[in-house]
Amino acid sequence: MHKLFFTMELKPSTSLLWGNLKLVYPNQKEIDYIATSGCAQWQQTEDEWARARGPIPHGFNYSIPTTPYYLPTKGIEGMFFHITPDPVQSLSGEIRSELGIHFDANVPGSAGCIVLKNKSGWEGFCIRMEAIAKSGIKSIPLSVNYN
Image 1 (tube, rainbow, N blue to C red):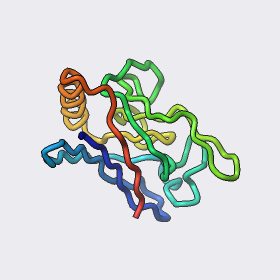
Image 2: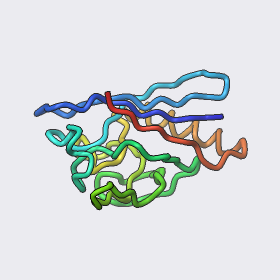
Image 3: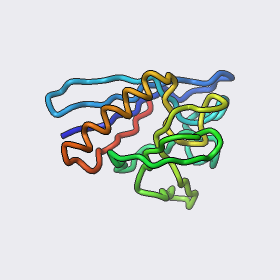
């Protein structure tokens, strides 16, 4: 079974923090991508529920489709793998929605999506996802872990 793992260290920082998106194949082959979630200065544990600024909340059974769709939205301006469930809600009622995986197309960082830093890495990710889709797999589980 294919799997995706997003890991990043959440901590106080004035700079944008980067983590790792790992694609794991059924044969345990791993492909790593430099990725982040959230905006600079909004990447601490308490920021997970800060709409349009904080990182994607952890603790959900996320998945992404193997086939993206195009979004013209500034900051995405390209292919978008929509993360579900959408929306997600905290125990105290905060909601995050419209999260996805995409290329970091504009100002570095994201409004909660997982964004890949390098264009070549993004292109490779899209090619690999297309091959997985052609094999008949419609979605892949995504795990989000902060250390």
